[in-house]
Image 1 (tube, helix red, strand yellow):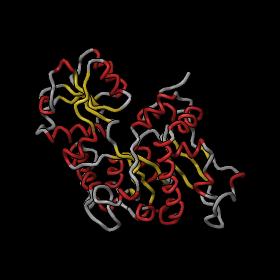
Image 2 (cartoon, helix red, strand yellow):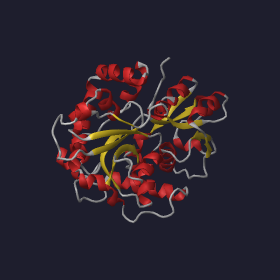
Image 3 (cartoon, helix red, strand yellow):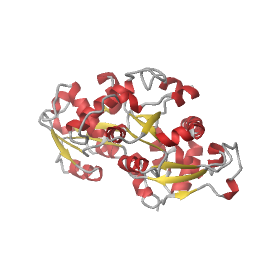
Length: 346
């Protein structure tokens, strides 16, 4: 029996995928060498349809990393990524902005080096057609179900703010993603800010998408994204490995968009998921080329301050402080950004 996995369901597969090395003796010496002593890369993956697992499925570690030994570390949440990086057991991984800010505020030595994807329609606010909600302002006093302390929690509050709604104007209900559909069917909530694959279930059951996370860019000047975080010590000692991976990522990202058949064939076999799950992931994957990331609308050039990403991180930090997830606001979010690798790729 095959599983249906989305970005948020990757943990179902991750629970069965152990941390393991995929670089065997046959790979040693293959591809370009980066030094006499063999190096090790601890590369994070959420155990699903991501570029890291595509490299793994293709057994292409030597092509990407030369003679370095690659250990794939399966994680199930952004908090695990931060803990593993802080403990020096993980070198690189993609994750959302919220855990990055939490790590940065708590002194974790790591840098955001590359935008993994632009979040546009994989997260959205869905409203009950029977609730007479035509615009965001109509949510006042309504019951909105969502998982607290997540990217959609932040996106929901940011969206409400654009309509002049404060945190106490809407009845926010903390719900696990896997319980939202049933609560929706029982009409216990009027709306939900949630992610795929829950969104289509709600739409099919008398719902309408009122707002997408991607709308925050126009409404509030925020860019919502997942990004690659790299442990600073690893970055300093092995910049060539970081660059090699990001260069390969850019090429594979094109494959994800332009040759979905290859990705579907590869990932369905490797992960044991069905084609619909892979296509759902590909259809909500929006990579940002390095040239675009160098603009102020994203990371900006090395040394530039207050890019759109930094602005978003600052707003995210304020949200985390308000909700008690960090004790104090970081003084300068620019310190989390290192766009030097993107500059080399552009």
